[in-house]
Image (cartoon, rainbow, N blue to C red; front, top):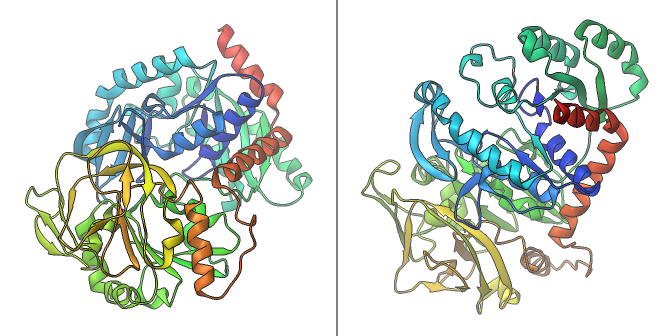
Length: 496
């Protein structure tokens, strides 16, 4: 089990890297996280919802994602509450206080999911959440030391040196653990180090003396283009300049921003996350992403001037709406069931569609083919796509609407639509840019509009790119972690 001294210490990537190493070494390995809190989620083949961090780790392990890898998913609805998803299905909305007192009832679900995964995998690499030293949460812990005890797992404790204070992080965490919990910690990892490791040597000696736990590795800071778990992601602050400028609207309740990873790995593209009209400028394309509160985020855009700015630019540049963003682009959002804020809200009126929010969540994987497109992306006509839908609402086209995506599977909603303005597109499909050259086709089309030529072969296939990233992660961990000691922890735990 990988635990961290705090959130964003690098647990997700370390789990992914260990999964990749063990896959390379011939083991059938799987990731596991009992409870995940994130707005980035995925739909399995069975139509069940799970956190995308475990999907990324499963991909590194070379296996398909299974909901038993993440039995509990919390999707924040506001600062004090979340939608609680258990075994891939919505249990309901709970306040933080109510969930804290309820969550121990979910231990049987966690055990059952873990046992199912045990039947499949030779090795399970578990990810903790936050810090095991949150002493106010210890009593009902089901994700850190509480889980390690349930499944009897050895623990590697990770600290992030890039933020400073790593020795205090690691020693302070050990000091706050109970003796039986500390005994589970078999090694310490210093993560995200920049510079000459010999500078750390004296500190490592003292750390091992005071903590009585060996340092299993010092991992350097890695520039990786892999999915982040949640909104702590650093990508929101990146400002690289590529010749193609894509602006993603970062509303307060943005979800599934992993949809745009495919563009972020392209050197020719800069993906900017925009929160105000003054930041928008004149990009080559605008994307309205998913939202956990479509009506609230549309009102936010309306109040801060982004809606007006986007509608003005829609006459000149392409606009894409994904899921919640697709709903916003329509003529009207109706919430008669009080799913979000109730009532009827005027949409941005850029797509000929009306959305009625529903309490039942649509969850399905989809695949299909783009039909004849007009406007800037006509070259995408006929390309295949794959992805998944996850939304609470049904969107219907008005008479002037045109569906431009044909589906090979479920018929729950429209896949891709356009309106009279051929610059504007909407879809419920997460991941629609990932396959079949759709993202590269979009970038090529945007480049042509600017009179720029991007050489063939420069834009790499996204799946091939990700595979190289996983191998790079594994190679780095092999070099800087003591893998012999880590494998020894597995053997020792198995013998016990």
